[in-house]
Image 1 (cartoon, one colour):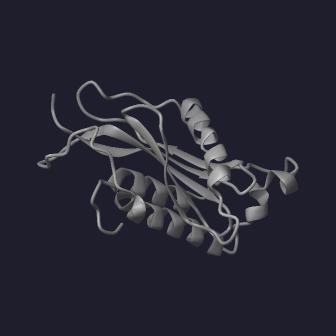
Image 2 (image 1 turned 180 degrees about the vertical axis):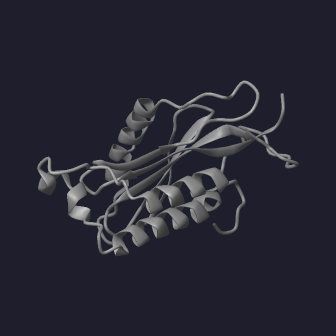
Image 3 (image 1 turned 45 degrees about the horizontal axis):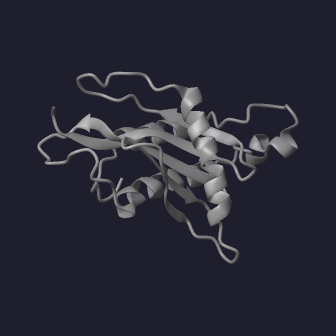
Amino acid sequence: MDSRSPSIACLGFIGRHNNPLHISLFPATGTGYEAERNKLEYSFMLNSCLDIFEGRMPTKGLTQDFGLLHALDERIAMYGWVTNTGVKIVIVVDMEGVPAEGAKVTAGLGLRNSDLTPAFHALQTAYIRLLRNPFYVPDHHNPKLSKGTGSLQITSPRFIKEIERVGKTWYPGIGTM
């Protein structure tokens, strides 16, 4: 078996009212791993993190990095981050995601929280750029205020392109994105 390196399987943005804002899936690659990921399955995984966020929410101040939320099995692990506005960002990592190119990385070694920090910073920056867009109205994605007037999902092409870039280029040990 070839050595494998962790890769991002899914990136999810969850609103402060626990509504999904955006979900991006990234297929596994390599021999025997070419498979599309099931969006409904990953939606359930992201939803399962909400209780963990709720339980770890500090009473004073806001801690951004929530670290490992939970590992579903030896292959899939979920890491969390919260923005100042209460939007939750979840990175689902596939520990056997891609063939390791020249690196001696094997599945099962796990990740340090610092391995995902550049990805979380890039995702948060993409979300901040979205909020700075004068044509973007965050209340349209609030289920309590929108009352069926539009999509609750973020559909900005620029935002989605940046999320796709982060998901495809991240690898353990990357310095900046």
